[in-house]
Structure formats: structure tokens, C-alpha cells
Amino acid sequence: MKHCPACSNESFELLIDFGTIPKSGVYLDSPEAPFPTIHLAHEFCTACGLIRQKAIESGSHDYSLVDRVTTRQFPKYIDQIIRSLSSYGIALDDTIIEIGSNDGGFLDRLSNAGFSRLIGIEPSIACNEISRSKGHAIISAHWDENTAASVLNEHGAARAVICRHTLEHVPHPLEFLRAIRSILAPDGIVFIEVPDARPITHDLRGHELWDEHLHIFTKTNLQLIMRQAGFEVTRCNAWPERSDINLLLWARADAGPSQNSLPDSAAAPASEIQLCREFEKRWKAFSSRLQVEAASWPRPVYMLGASHPQTNFVHFTGLESSIDAFLDDNPAKANLLIPLARPTPIFQASKLLADPAPGTIIRSAFGYEDWMDRATAPLASESTTVVKPLTNQLS
Ligand SMILES: [Zn+2]
Image 1 (tube, rainbow, N blue to C red):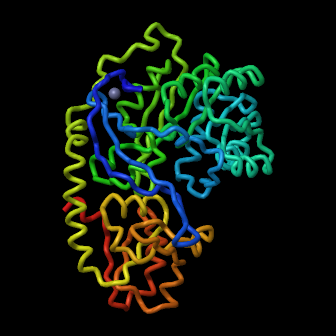
Image 2 (cartoon, rainbow, N blue to C red):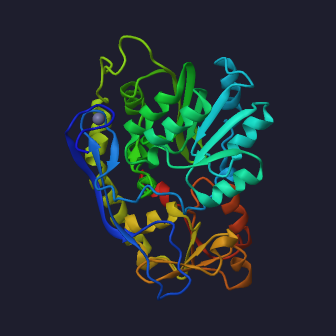
Image 3 (cartoon, rainbow, N blue to C red):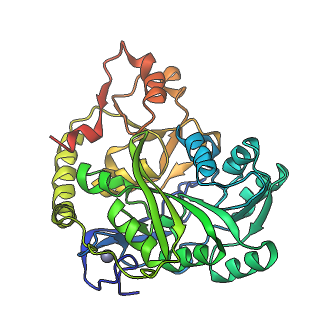
């Protein structure tokens, strides 16, 4: 897989190499428990700026046993996406396929809006149990040309395909999109949603370089790969959501003569490529500043949040020895440990009330300002040091 799936260019340069770190999403039930590691490094296409993992491990894209549900994370614009289907002429009894249907949360919304012929495609066994319990028709599979062929054979072409926050997880995004193209009716519409790469390179949000995201797109290269896959892009918007930006793209099956040919300008703006070239240097400078600060943080130091953005942040900045505990109210993580330099406990936020005040709190539950305000309110009168880590990046 040498060439770029978005623009076919073969020249990639290193974005950053984080070395070998524990895989994200791994929680230990004892300090001695073993955990898997990954050598995490990213590269970028020097023509279109597409960021991808340098070595994509086999099996890294198997989500059969992943049980993470995303329904509670729906963005505010979800109803607008559903309304857009009608504006593209999708009728209530048209076949709509959602690829990466997770626990059926978006299918619920479609069903509530009156759409009646819905099919979800999802590999996660645990998520599919939830979807089916709600009455949804689900095919347990990873999406590829074989799955597409059997869906087409059994259900016919789709008038709409929805694929939210899935394309960035797959090892072969061009083939994945071509498989979508193969099941789309000639007048069909596809909706794709992915995170925007720009906060990473523009705002130095390096913790977003998650090991589950194999490719990270910008507006430019997302549109390029859609055209490569045989679609005609009708809309592509960048929408802020919490502390991130998502790209929302609508496209039609392109039956015109320009199918599969590249648009006139396949190149990203030079400034985008330059930001990729400077990323590692900027991230290391930021990390060094933070490590110097961390040496004077009063102990114990608690980090807000115990998900991949927080563990990424700690590993990527080299703060492993500076963190004493993570605070997270997800009951599934209670009493577990995170593999850092030494396995580090996860506490519920109520711990802040029960124990002497921590020396330092890091406001690292990025995008969850309300929860952080509530969790830290009891400390208002204490002498706890509060660190807002991202504000350091731009200083
Ligand atoms: Zn490219």
C-alpha cells in the first residue's frame, strides 16, 4: 500500500513517531496484568496531506469484539442530517443502509423519522445484540466488496448509504468506498462523516492521533478519495462539535464521463503540507514545556477523563510519571488501571469529595466542560492547582 488512496501520489513523509506505547482502550484489573502495545507512527501524503498510520497492523481493524457504544455521543446536527435525506429525494420506504451502525442509535433516529427500510452493517457482536433487541435488521460483518455483493444480492440497491465515523478506522478506505458505490442506486446519495485532521495540525491537538484512526482526512483529500471511488461530491462542510471539527460530506453516484478521473487540483494548499512538516518539531517543543511545568505540579496529580484522548495525551507528551490517577465516572472503568510507566488507577469524580483535595487537576476531558466544572466545583475553595493543558500549546 505505497500510493495515496486519495490522490495516488507515492511520496509520503513522517508526521511523527510516538514509539512503542500501550494500545488505547486497554484497562487492567491488576498491576501485573499484561497489555498489548503498538508502535505508533504517522505519515502524510506530500501532495494531498492525507495522514495515515505508517504501519497498519493486521487485525487492527477487527471490531468484532469491541463493545464501545456511541449513542450518547450524538452531535447536535444529527437531526439536520436526517432532514437532508428528504431534501435529496429519499422516500420513507426507500432502502437506507448504515455502515458502522454501532448499537443502532442512528437507526433509531431514522426509524423515529419514519424511514422504514433500514439495514445496519456492523461487526461488533455486542453492539449488534443491542441493535437487534430494538428490532433493527443488522448484518454482522466488516464492510468490503464481498459484504456489498451479498447485500446487493439480498436487498437490492440502496437509495441512501450513511457512514458515520467509520471510514477513518478502515485499512483500505478507497476499496471500502468503492464497495459503497457498488450498492448505491444511480439516483442514490451517500453521507460520510469523519473527524477533520486540521485541529491536529493547525491547533496541535496531537492526542487526536488515535491508534484506531488509520487515515485522517481534510476537506481536500476526503473529496479526492470520494471522486477516486466514483462519487460526485455535492456538499462538504466542516462542523465544530465539542472540541473537535467533523467533516460532513454528501455525494451522489457519479455516472458522468469524469468518473474516476482526478479533479484539476489534487494538491492540498502548501500551508497544509508545511504544517504537517512542522508538526513533530512543534509537538516536541510543546511536550518539553509541559514536562518542565509538570515537575512543579503539586502531587497528587489527577487527570480528568480516562479515555483514549487522555491516555494518548499522557503517552504522547511523556507525562507518564507525572500522573497519579485518572478521574472518570464511567462505571465500566471503576477500579481498573491504565497502563502507564506504572499502572495508574481510575477513580470516580466523587473521590474528590471523599479524600483530601488533590494537589493538581488537569482539565483534560477535552470538550466536556460541563462535566469538568461539576467535578471540580467542590475544589473551588481549595488550593488545588488547575492545569488547562491545551492552552499551553498555542503560547
Ligand atoms: Zn494524497
